[in-house]
Amino acid sequence: MEFKTKINLPLVFRIEGFLVLIEGLFMLATLPVTYIYRGLYAFSMPFSALITLLTGLILIIATRQHRDDTIKSHDGVFIVCISWLVLSLFGAMPFLLSKSVPNFTDGFFEAMSGFTTTGATILTRLETVPKDILFWRSMTQWIGGLAIIVFSLAILPYLGMSGMQLFVSEINGITYDKLHPRIMHTARRIWFIYLFFTLLETLLLYRGDMDFYDALCHSMSTISSGGFSTRTGNIGEFSNYSQVVITVFMVLSGCNFSLLLLSLSWRSFTILKNQEFRTFLLYILFTGIGVGIVLLFACHKSFGSAFRESFFSVISAFTTTGFFIGDNDAWPTFLYVVLFMLMFIGACSGSTSGGIKIFRHLLFVKNSMLELRRIIHPNAVLPVKVNGKAISSSGVYKHTTFIFIYFLVFLIGAIILLALGTDFETSIGASVAALSNVGTGIGEVGPGGSYYIFPTGAKWMLLLLMLLGRVEVFSLITLLSRSFWKN
Image (cartoon, rainbow, N blue to C red; front, side):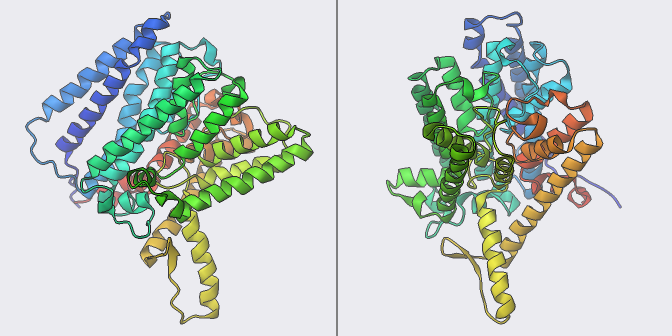
């Protein structure tokens, strides 16, 4: 059978050229940090920015004669998947040129972990890494967190499954055109909220015990649900005030940004009417209180310390941010199991967090309960409803299938890591941490752990899991399928 690509390659190259050009401009934004904190390899950021900018310009100029700008479904899938690889490829240059990492695999791993907002790190002693490299590291997460929102709005609607349907989470009484008649206008408004939260958190952290550099780095990592820090001890090296501020903004990063936009635009409490958001808050409240009680009585912590650590850890796992304030060695084992389970759930759809998302959990639980009623009343018509709106059978089936495939990919990833010589606890911890874009897992990759311990083959397996988690599994699986490339 004859094979012929369906991909509009000139259009793909043109879009990737713009993305690479934008990445180069962000690299230029790190130059003031390079100038202030001059290190041994201060040339690494300027040189990386120059190469990235030139490559982007070459791609744009080479495709300037192309007139077909229509993005079809195949183009959308391909662009979404390939963009993370392209951004990570150029994003790895500063790590390599500064000799912060020893080889290409580690540099690519660090960059991919940043752009996918995973937060898994190869680095061990962060205090020895050049300041501008750590700043770029946090910036990759900030870019990645915003990119997934823009992709969801501007490109994923062409896929039919994700896009606006999942992004808005079936808000009762609100249609997509009420966001804005043009999708890119909505993207700009969400970008403004994203930037506003970043600057607000920076100012609040700066009022505490962080200098402006640390405040900005941690703000970028928080809003993007990333988890990269400038300190080896992570957030545990800062004051209780800073921990509380970061906790609040982790919750905001786990919210649906389109709902936040609607709530601010309409000066209403639209977000409070959303069932997914209410479930998100209830999960945090009950889990945080439960874990806090255990820490209070089983670990004999003070009241303030127990609940501060509890809510910080629960929210960090829930929103897949991956920040930590201690090694948790004194915690009872079953609390690790609770945090492990939270990593799968993720926060709201349309947020910067990874994981399965609460919207899918709601559908799964509601459908499971209704299935029991259908057994008793086989002729009854019992549709699954979220926010008062019925979800089609195909929609329920699609999201249920996603959950099944998600756990299947997690198991396959853990088995492969086991086969490559990793212990059981670390294998399952690293697999879920990479797939759910959490970064901080359990075992050797628990709080304070580094992914430097993994062999090269295991690192590439984890890279694939990070990418699968960021593009939500289906897109990459579709890209790898044979039928996708058939004419």
